Image 1 (spheres, rainbow, N blue to C red):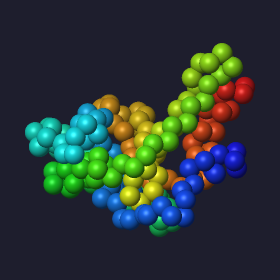
Image 2: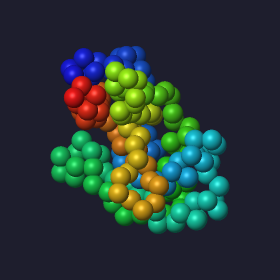
Image 3: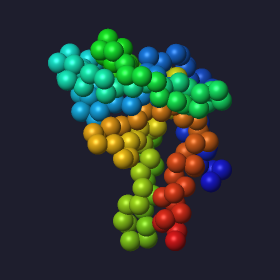
Image 4: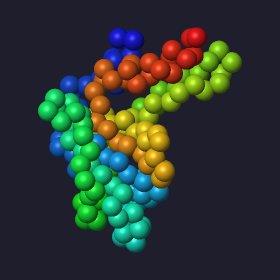
Length: 153
């Protein structure tokens, strides 16, 4: 598992800068998809999902533990989605498959201005929501562990 932490390590020459994407962003899939296909999300689509986009604090801040705050207003939602679209510098996708090539689990990360962010569905929600959460290289093994355990059992 320690070897997995070496996969997403960035070169020392990688230029990191502050990100316009909150450390934790929970957004309807429809909005995230629109942002990925364009540099801006249509205002009518953002308005349709008013109150559904939430942001949270840094998951590595021991005092808050990545807690989600209240809903973002429309300008903040548009800014976060635009940053999600324009900052993307790379992707990392980890797929765990069984011996019979049946997929057991997938981990998807995107490289933004401030580093890696995991992109995952939010389970147990009525709406189709995804969460974009800042992660560190060592988190790759932790996120793949459940799928790896299932694949080897």
